[in-house]
Amino acid sequence: MGYFATLWDELERGVRPAYFPDDLEPNEDGLVALGGDLSVDIVLEAYAKSLFPWTGEHPIPWCSPDPRLVLPPSSFQASRSLRKLSRQGRFRVRFDHDFLGVMKSCASISRPGEPGTWITANMLQVYSQLHRLHVAHSVEVYDGDELCGGLYGLSLGRAFFGESMFSAHPNTSKLALYTLSMRLAEHNFLFIDCQQETQHLQSLGAFAIPRSEYLDQLSEALQHPSHHYSWSVWDQHRE
Image 1 (tube, rainbow, N blue to C red):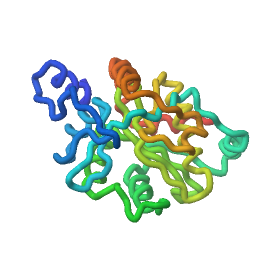
Image 2 (cartoon, one colour):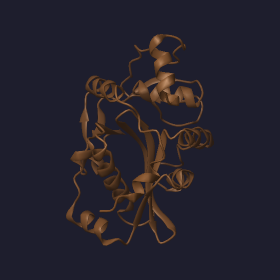
Image 3 (cartoon, one colour):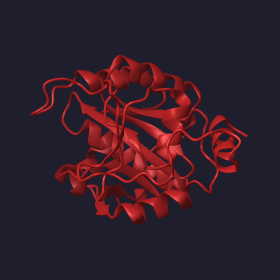
Image 4 (cartoon, rainbow, N blue to C red):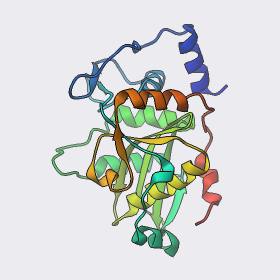
């Protein structure tokens, strides 16, 4: 068994005490719990129970929005220009080659209406540990040797939990998500968890579902073995 499989098995059998009760319900803002700490085990349990940390700042807000935005990998809607960009070969897309670089780039990109980043130092530390366990993965887009776009997230069973994207050049985060969607579809992933509703992601094929339906899909996804190995092997694929 891998690290997550062992942890989840112990939680389900009651060998390990649960950090989050199964009957937690979100408030109108999607907040389920407030407080605690970030650690590999707590974060893994959270995602497996539909929760994620909104930020690493204390007290840590654990969220599970209702409705939930999901993107089935095979439903990604790539525009003609994005498909053309993918075929051109100007940008090189890679997996798991610079996870920390992607996280730091996501943290440094300024976003409208946000005075700072929610990606705190403790998040960098814990998610880097998850990356070393092959639970957290990154997709990088390069222009030559320059990291110019990408995304990162977690993989459990046949679910991918997207965390953040960045673009230093136009459309490079879209290219990262497009390439990831194709790889996940090849491996029969059920959905990409996009967390919150945004017009940008909805334009790419994501749609909102009730939290109850999301919990059912998550439960199904966790019945399957996790792809917990370095996804750098996916670099072998070419469009």
